[in-house]
Image (cartoon, rainbow, N blue to C red):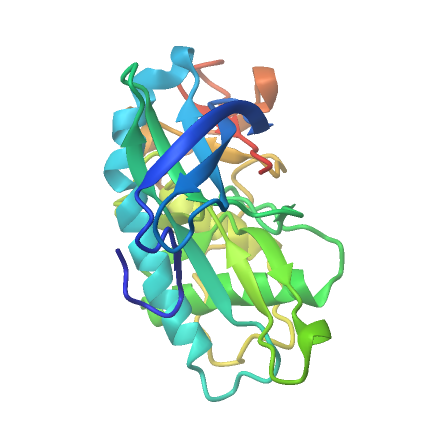
Length: 277
């Protein structure tokens, strides 16, 4: 369990009773409601996410990098939260759950549920144009991670909620609570949601710096929209890594089920997952 103050975890609750009630569904996964049994979160609601049977072959590749993605995002959230120039309550907590296996052998990722869920950005460059300061803050956080990593990666696919606790008094702390972030990296080191250089360049092609950004933060030399606009999370298997390098001229389109796919190959084993839970 991460000890970071930016981590939102199951604490010491390890047992979850999973129900058949659906909290949400995406292309790849289904989210069922669960309830923690014992520990600090006893009787609280958990989000229990599993792959659909037809996509279960992808789960090992996904889970192999999921916890590393979470720990890396938590690391950058810690740095963001401790910035001396932070003026508003834009503190970030990143959800990190744990794997449980049902009696039938199905793997679930169990984590604290997030209500009033909102998508701020995707991993293919899409940014919500709602004009809110919350989306501005999330855009800036992505830009910040690119700068702090020396241009090696970009935290993206930011989704969750802003928990405004001001009604509880002057000393109550408000915060962002995020789940299922992605990382795009030059070396494509972060699994199936890592869209590598094309993911990074697509974000910056759509990102206009705002009041949360700093003028000295670095940007990539090449900024290009490689993907069609889609709020969904895109996933590509490791076999597609070559197509996600900016030196490769593969183009992408929206395929069936709203998936971003390679234009040259039609539908392949890539797809997208827009989850709401």
